[in-house]
Length: 622
Image (cartoon, rainbow, N blue to C red; front, side, top):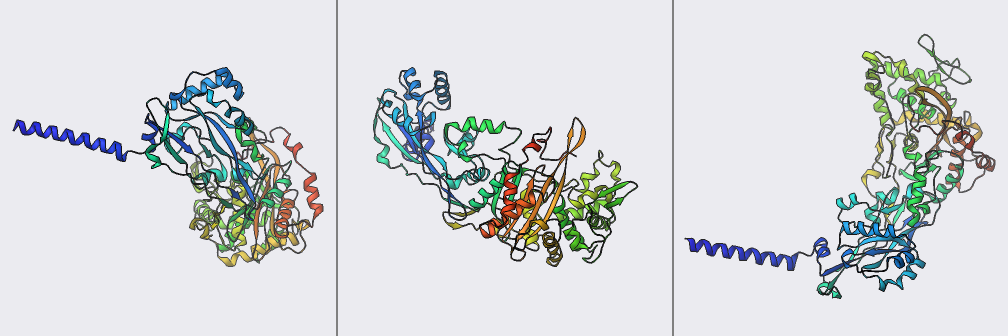
């Protein structure tokens, strides 16, 4: 029995050794194992990153050659550090730091010492590389921008950090990755797949040829070309209109949800974040806490929507059957409620029903409709929750689910929001406590892209497509259900007709009468959003924001947009003018109202922004 056990142990041990040897020789050809093999050198062949085109086929982003100085620490031999530093125009301290970092990362795997050499630097260094054993030059691609606009849309690429390398084995030290915008969201499509070559070494560490005759080598696969929904010409024009101003413009195609223009101001040129100058330029932009050029106001800026929100108040009132289109309300320079409270209004004829109420932006009209909507239910909490569901069906108060790399939720207050003890103790509040919501001036906050989406939903008579930036991949149209399936509001289609007529009369008879464009039926709504902040614990009012939403043509609309100008005084002063110009530019390609265009080009708000506290919050502190 003991002899049998001994034989069994010997046989089992032999089988284990043979199995392990077979695995190591035949099956274990993974990147990691081969990279760590002392006798094999792994060289990566980087693919071309995919190009980016605008909706009309204009090339926006392509590639330019770049060269990285790489090092394999274990292969280093003594070299003249002063000559090496002189060739690369770096100091010795930086070189030592980079070599230490490379050794910590891996003594056998290549690491970057100096990234992104120019062609001239590469040519000069190439002649001297024979002196520096252990170093070699890796060719890569950097982005080359054919536009000075849309930096917030396109994004940029930068070097991967250690945390990402640990999470994703595809990336190695020194690799580049999309950091923002389209470059980040569609990184997998754009980056392609690296090719790999494995070189066999002899015991003297000399290259002796491809490992296993190149059996496991692979060729690089170039990244896919993307077509985005942006119209570069419209984007450029919008950026020009926004010079000297702060805010955002978002234009959508209502029938698809495609983003025609996504403008934030101030902004920066995309080329600033390319190459070896990217890091210092990014630092400078990041620490500009006044203009905030890296802050995408179009998708992240949260503002009170102001009077454009009155359209939602009207639609909810009709859906809840608390008002008819023919019922009129009196306005005596505002709406009085409680003992001494008043919601002010500007001078206009009175009384007004719904269509002229929208056209003349009557606060008293919408205050009445809002109170009826909330008071229809047994408690104000029930009323607010019902109202909230209607509002959120237009895409407000939450992320839209778009394919942009950043964004903000905005705010649609809930019953619990008002129930909080520090606001209204013991839940003792009434509909009048929230009356400012009626005119988009209460606790509601929205981003420009949310307002543009809300406008598209109205233009479509009750539905919208999720806004998105990608149109096609390698020429194949986008077919994601997320972006092609319509999302319906809680409002019946029939109720949109009088509201749209009211928006049309804003241009023909109302607050935007001076902004008409001959031959184009535009529907729009001016807005003046009050702007408050807290300074040293005291609530202070700053210069009002200028807001405007619009779509055109009235029937079968081709564009819906929202314009928000910080500290722009009132709706028609800046935002309304810009909206009319953007609409005509998109529909006709030329501008007939050159007087309007010249006024915008020649006026800016730099003096306004230079005032104390003008650069305060984008999110209003109540």
